[in-house]
Length: 165
Image 1 (cartoon, helix red, strand yellow):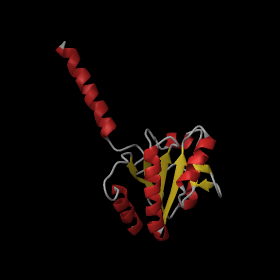
Image 2: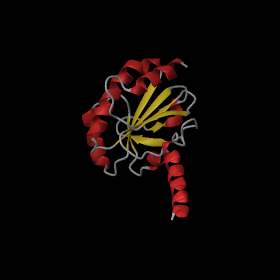
Image 3: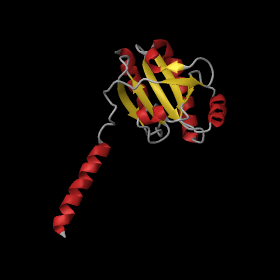
Image 4: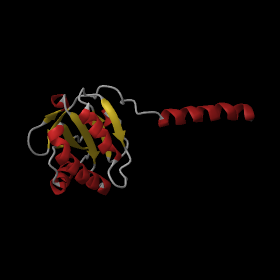
């Protein structure tokens, strides 16, 4: 019995280590995409090269997403002139619901539609809301999956560092 328990325990430890490690995209070039904007021009990620980019993945039924997008809008208004670009990326199946949600949030950055969830899959988004932060060279530098923060979110300090690079 102990002979079987040790391999099982080792497998469990290896699985936990893989889960706890940095997401596979950290440090890699961000997958490019082209998505339809809910208002205005469509967006190709590679056209933002040279800017620090935040991708905010959200769903229309997510109240935490609404709060994070509103908070992110303030960050965008503050740091946009310094080279910050923000895209909200809806991964809703229901495009009409996503469009209605986006109109209700009223942010100053483009809201994009990914109803097939292809971009969400490329970025390994497994919960909402999620933020992916890219540096000016187009590499994924940070991933935030924990929207609950007190005071200034941790990602703001990271954005400042990237904007200063």
